[in-house]
Image (cartoon, rainbow, N blue to C red):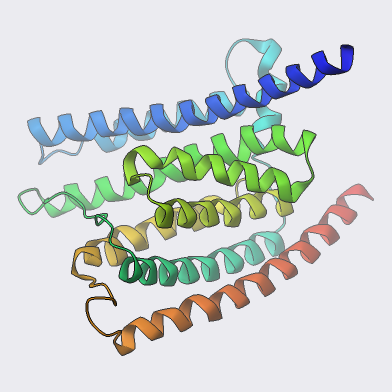
Length: 284
């Protein structure tokens, strides 16, 4: 009976961390969206929403990392955020693996869009607004998600999962929750859910291997910028290969996805060895 109670308690605790991860990212995204819309409707020439969100982002990050009341939860918050500094070699290999994975994922996204009919991830028409305002807002939008999603999903949720499951299972569960969290905005379409699941695998593996969410944040930021500016704006123009024969660009993107997946796996293997070596030096 006690074992059953303990199992239920652990399950409820993990569900709570899942809800918390959703809440962290949804609240941050909602606040940013509200600030952005208000800014564009009132004073588009003055992008005040960007510094306002930067302050809120810093406050949220600080609190999740253990600062602020109550003091009784400071250490737990710091532990679950998992924002630990790592060696230069670890950062380098995490960024190499992450950069290669972004190229692979870009290839998969383009190929999937030509295999399955989906609504494009097109940005709203911003041609009427000052370019500097649009550029700053894209930059801030590309910062909010990396900080809050890494904190919620690869920090709090995955740290809790790693206490209960082996690492591959913990990463897979956090990635599945991460994919589902994108459903309300991306649509619960299987290609997009699969895509975001593998995005979660990349960042979840990085967090586990380095025992820190910090190395993934720059990769997440750059990846979003690439998709915002180079991938998503062209989604609407991508035709289905079933309606027309696949052109040479389709096969180039297929090759891109496969080649860079192999290179990503090799880079992650190297990251695992580097991280293990650095952990051994720290322990000694």
